Every structure is written in structure tokens, then in C-alpha cells.
Image (tube, rainbow over the protein chains, first blue to last red):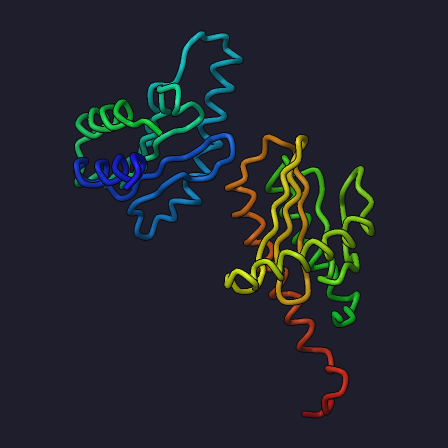
Length: 123
Length: 142
């Protein structure tokens, strides 16, 4: 099992309320790995959320903020979507995407766990 | 040999091409051709549609043989990446192929999503039109 598979499995099992998770390359919009999802098509989510990340990176550049994205939270009426770019050298250009059921999840704990998984992930 | 198309069905199909261009501003061109290289519609700057359609037909032939020889069934897509962009060809039914041209920074995931959907819709339009046409050699009043 690859490190990516292990990280995705870790996210699905240790984060309460996780619906699906994906590791995405935002240069191409393609997913390196996905797990779970159910009715949520994670390949489409990976492609569509690539545009979200690209737009925010552009906004940060335009504002001359010498900063980087830690995470992006999108709150739907019944779900949370969490995006977390990888910070390691080997993970440059990748982000983790996590969809959560709002009723079954603890947002603070989920962010904490995702930060841990991202930190441990060497691609 | 692909069947002859009734030009009356083309406006709907061209509408689909316009739709896919509008949904993906990163596209630099679209081309709809038959699998044997006949151009049906195109909207692409800087490429010569007849030449590209003929090349696409040749590449599809090779791609289809590779897919078949490796036990992967019939060819669905062909993606070429060059230094300055991508050329992506998608099956749109049994007789048509949709080719999209993009710059190098395109979101390939989204390109696949939009092109597969458009390919499916074009296939449905083309198939509906084919059903209205009498097939050569078959009884017309069947």
C-alpha cells in the first residue's frame, strides 16, 4: 500500500463524519488518489476544486500577500469541504480535499486531524 | 466508412460545441470530425482543420489498435501533451470524435469532465439523426 493510500485511509477512518477524501494535483486537476465519496464524484470534485485553489492562489498574488494557504473551508448547508495544500517539498502542487457530513463531524477536530495527516504525508 | 450527415442536424451539434467552449474559456479551439477524418464543424484559430482531422483519424486508428491489442476494449480518448498545450480527442458515439485544443495550464480533470459530457450529448444528437436516415442496403419501410 502506498503512502498516499495510507493517508487517505487514515483520513477516512480517523476523521469523524468523513464522506470522501482525495489527493489532487492542482497543475492538472487530476486526483492522485481518492477514497470514499459515495454519491459525491471525487474525480469531478478534484477537478472543480482545483479551480478554487488556483483562484485563491491568484488572489493572494494579486494582493501582494507574501503568504500561503494553510487551508480552505467551504461550508454547505449539510457538508463541510476542507482543502489543505501540501507543504512538504515532495508534495508541492498537491492538495488534500476532504468532504464531511456536517451533522456527524467536529470541524475543529477534523482540521486538526487533516493537518496531522498532511504533515505526515510524503508523496 | 462513416454515414453521410444531414446538415439539418448540425445546428444542434454546433450548439454543443459553442456550449463547451463557453464553459471552458481555456480552450483555444474545438473540432468535430468523423472517425475517418471528415470535418463536420470547427472553431479553432491557428490550426488547419482538415489536416488536423486527418491526423486525428490516423492517431485514432493507431490508438484503437493499441487499446485492442492490450485488451482494453474500444478507444475512448486520446490525449496529446505538447510544450505549449494539449490536444484531446474524445469519442462522441461510434462515428464522431470531438477534438479540443487548450493551452498548457488547462485543468485536465475539468477538460475530461466537460469533454466527456459534451461527447455524450453529441453522440445522442448524432445517433438520433442516424436513426431517421435509411441505412443503405436495408429495407426503407422496415
